[in-house]
Image: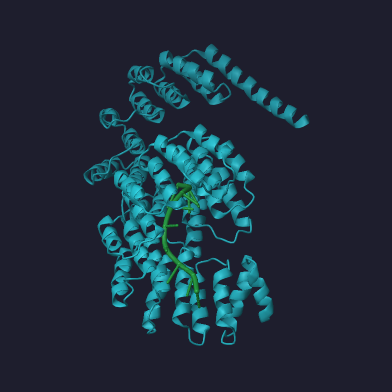
Length: 577
DNA sequence: CTAGGGTTAG
């Protein structure tokens, strides 16, 4: 490759293949004859993004005759900007091993990497070096420190650095403002906001989303939004995000429609809203409208399918994402949704493929991803592997406990499920409805009626309303134990409309115990709710047969045959038109 | 020469 051609390439954003060519060029040829400025440009403009980016940057540094402190600083910033926080910090340390004193540029970039990558120890180390190298009067370094402590939630130290600053600018103030909001202190944030000598659009946006997120106070958020001297895209997005978070989707949509311009963030926020209220169609509609689909929009749509029980569509879109020539690879978030889809399908073959894929790409297993895998292994029967992963978690949270408790329930490990629940309560983690689904499933699997009933009433003691899923498990448990009347009474007491999950459970129990009385009631409801599902007719027919009512059974089987025929002719009519 | 702050996905 000739150098002038390289330069023209760099004027545009590079495709993956072009970047790979340059990468190969960099590796094969020594860069000694290249202008340092050109090398920096390569670093700046290449969009070749992969796990090897760290080695790539290192190689470029290695090939420079004598990389100066500037080049090192630039490399640190490059990695920090591309989300490779650990690597950025690593390079910052490497530079000092070579004997070069870091520039304030490198210091602030490395601090940013520590703040984003939540690396407290690294941040503290750099803080010490800020004093060692005499950068304590540098506004950039100081502000980066304020930001670091704010992001770590350590407001005491953030304020200490902030008050020691001789000069403060908007960014310093905004970092403090953000810190207060992040630690949930709306009052103090408002005080800082009023006290600020200069406010820019970022300060206003932070305060608006603070009212929306921390205060759950959309009225104040809207007032502030209207008072803003200048609004940008992020201001609108903050309002939409606030409405989505508090479940007011219509208001979110009206602001979305009223926006002068929209970007991917606006679309993704709105899609998340539709996903939460189960409107997959509308989310897909917005996704289709996106002209430049980035990784985040794919992640949002795949997550939407996964969360709304459409695992096949999730995997299909994942496949399309791999085929689309995105300049990025799927990340941990993509795979967490994909794993969830695999686990819903209960098919370990997809799961194993994804696990290998994670290893191949070198994606770091964080707690979210591990929890998704725990759910997958547990649902596919590898409960011991699930336990192994559970032990490897850095922090065991509500979701992780709930996933494993349900896994134990499905796999008949009732005692382990109960033990885990106790452990969770002792760790001061408040269970939610999902946790109780797992625990009830465990009792149901073991046929422990009394324990199940106790568990069911403890749901309300925790202040929750059981969902129809919980009722369904209880009906199944009572019904299988032959307590059909109790099961029926439980359904009658339901505060919501019973679904086929509940009536179906009763019908199944009646089949087990050959009970016509409740079987007929349950079947009637199932017929009304799902007239096309022939399984319910057959169940009732079997109940009739078991008590010798052959005529009724034959009558029902006839209905089933007719329904099957109607289905087939319906299909052929659609095809022929 | 650059650099520090806000909005999105599980």
